[in-house]
Amino acid sequence: MSLIGKTYYFNIMKYHSRDEKIENDEIIASIHNEAIQNRGFIGLPVNKEISINNIEMLKVEEKEKLLKKNQVYLNKIIELAHENNIELIFVKSPNQLSAKEVKKYNTVKEIANEQNIDFINYNENFEELNLVNGEDFYDYGHLSYKGAEKISNSFANYIVERENKN
Image (tube, rainbow, N blue to C red; front, side, top):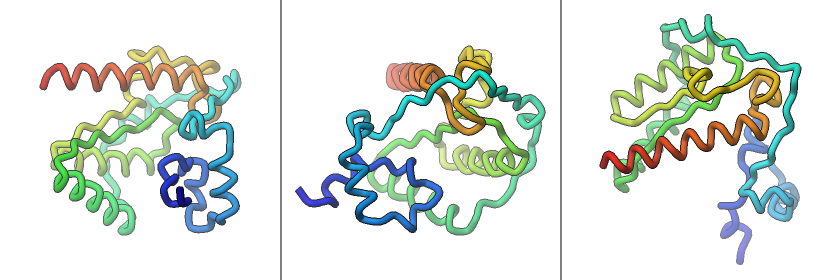
């Protein structure tokens, strides 16, 4: 099988901040990495020092335009999904938010509403999910393995409930 045939297993999130500079040897190394058995998931440890507080950030209602490149690709994804009768769900995993991020997510949420796409922002349901500071986060941008399990279970339940309604 060619390298292109295995791209499904490539951990794109591992390289999300430098995707234009990925070298072939990095791709090959990633394919042979143990994490590939989990489709790229690596359970991050608990960090008891992390405390996420988004109460004030979730009050931000303003919107901010997306970068042109991001808007173009978002529109292409939506268009491609519609053309192929694929239902999209936009998901925002929990992290420490900035006002700038919230404004962009508000824009994405508006686009999702206009396109009849579900948008789940897990920053809005900390209590419902029983997310615990010092237990469910690895750092301010990533869940620990415990937090990832809670979000995965919540999302799986959401999909089952959604399918049962249809």
